[in-house]
Amino acid sequence: MVTDLGGGYAEADGGPVRHIPVLLHEVIAALEPEAGKVILDGTFGAGGYTGAILDAGADVIALDRDPNAIAAGQAIVAARAGRLSLHHTKFSALDSFAPDEGLDGVVLDIGVSSMQIDEAERGFSFQRNGPLDMRMSGAGVSAADVVNRAKVGDLIRIFGFLGEEKQAGRIARAIEKRRVNHPFETTRDLAGMIEIVTPRKAKDKIHPATRVFQALRVFVNDELGELAEALFAAERALKPGGRLVVVTFHSLEDRIVKKFFADRSGKAAGSRHMPMAFERPATFEPVGKGMVSATEEEAQVNPRARSAKLRAGIRTVHPAMKADFSIFDLPDLAEIERLGA
Image (tube, rainbow, N blue to C red; front, side):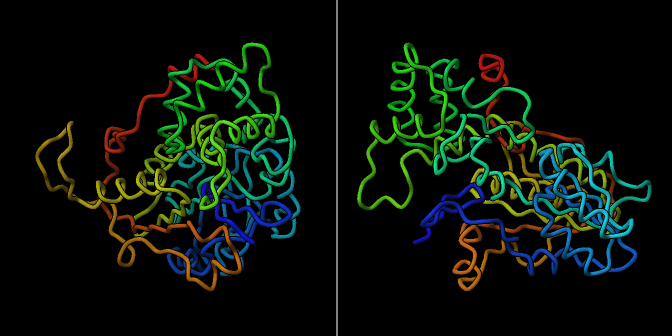
């Protein structure tokens, strides 16, 4: 049996499913790679998208914040005879790697990779016991730091917003009580406590700890902030006619991408910051009719695709707009990050 866990991975009998590029046909169709074009793959991972783009004739600049992905990708770099460059960096800095004439395309596959899930020592999954880490780059505040040191109110905010966990308060208070004498060190230790506090019901499709683990991973790696930064960076880096293709795996990510393309399409609905609707030159035009999801056939073969959503836009001739994070309505979690450090 396979269960969709969201956040870009799936749970199957025997453990998480290995990485298979999601919506690959749809991504390539939206990007339109060909000889003479330069495409940036901001989330290299195992090189699934990069390989298909290279096979279509385009050259690739690839980025990844995970040093393990960079090390594993060197064989692909060597095999592609100068058509692929691979860089260890966050994708929010992607415009720093764009040629002077701009990029022909940018593709982003948001979330954790199946390879990271498979590595118990990375602490991303409770399917394999390991240290409570979750850091994609291996640096900075870990999930254990947050769980053991953040205030209970901050844990409620993290679990409730980033994990959309309805039992955030109950779980956070149980963590606060337990960690006084026994700090959390491993993935299964935390998952086991959550399962005791919020037992799995017969109708539940996912483990009770799934949303908390998603929230911790998103928080530790600032995934939503990185995504927002990367969208603005892509707007600056793409040449007129260049294409931005983004694949997301849960509602928070998709909401950010949807709001970005809506704002950059030339029309923006009112908000608390700008209550009147207005029109302005568009920096992106939509590709297709909006969001694209996986076919049932792909979802059967690749469970990771079941929650995937693709949105894409074509860069216009108008200058990039100011990076205005208020369009995303994201909470400010920086203070919590300092508390966890």
